Length: 123
Image 1 (cartoon, rainbow, N blue to C red):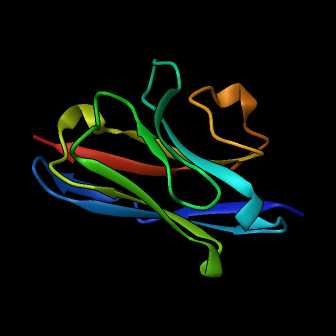
Image 2: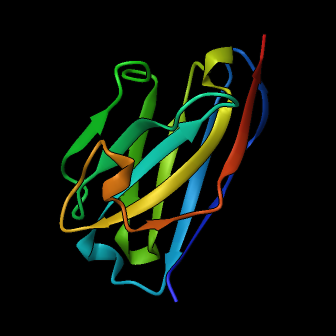
């Protein structure tokens, strides 16, 4: 079965960095666009970043542009989110997701989701 497993979350101070990883199995990873989303308590899930299946095109939410970088390694079936200059407002559970046939900012269009990893940024 398809599984997406996030890792790398934790507690960091404002201005610090984290790298999230999402390991995929049970799907032909190189044919899927991948996305990162996040959700804070009491808030709706929001788009963070997405990357095309070949890794050549990326899109970011305005709130993270210049600070976060999404990459993928198709040989390792893994997508990453490098997060720099973290702010308290980045605190959320971060989810990776897979969408066959392209990328999207809309979570409803993603077929598979990971369990999430908590990122907490202290001030």
